[in-house]
Length: 107
Image (tube, rainbow, N blue to C red):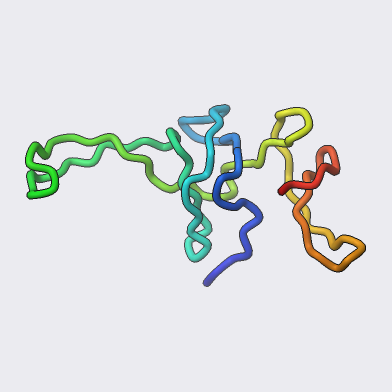
């Protein structure tokens, strides 16, 4: 089942729980079906790969794994702290995301 995600690609987020708690990064990909996000430099895991034509060396590779969207929070553009995201409609009828901490509209 797909979920409406409030975090989008290229958002700056902070990790709230887990081994990378407190670290910040940019969202590289969003997986709404699984309610997960892929953040650059966060949740790195070791993948053991066999040698192949594309990677003749093989070996142990460090890659980023998706993290659950509830474990990250958007960084408020005003004061660089974690914030929740809300959605409101503007006067012209467009829906925009805003930071609940400061009320600042997020582009």
